[in-house]
Length: 106
Image (cartoon, rainbow, N blue to C red; front, side):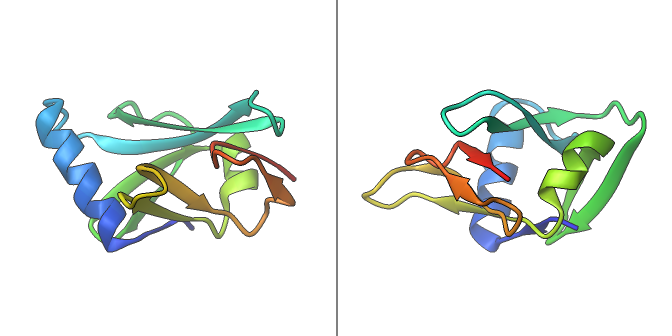
């Protein structure tokens, strides 16, 4: 399961409204790349294929089976502080992360 903090939920809802994506689910996936080997990807989607569907804090999340192995137990947060702005993944499966927080290794 993937958890969503209140700050992340609020930002997701703001983006859905601003980008005319209301009613679409949040797709969270992992792909190869980044300075640590794997990268997080976020998008809005309604195409449910062989995905796992989670709901936390009123956010529906789609995760493909391959990405699910890397994301189980992850918490999605949002920071808008002085040290940067953006979504943060608190992933217990990551053995290391890069300085920007956008990529990780297991």
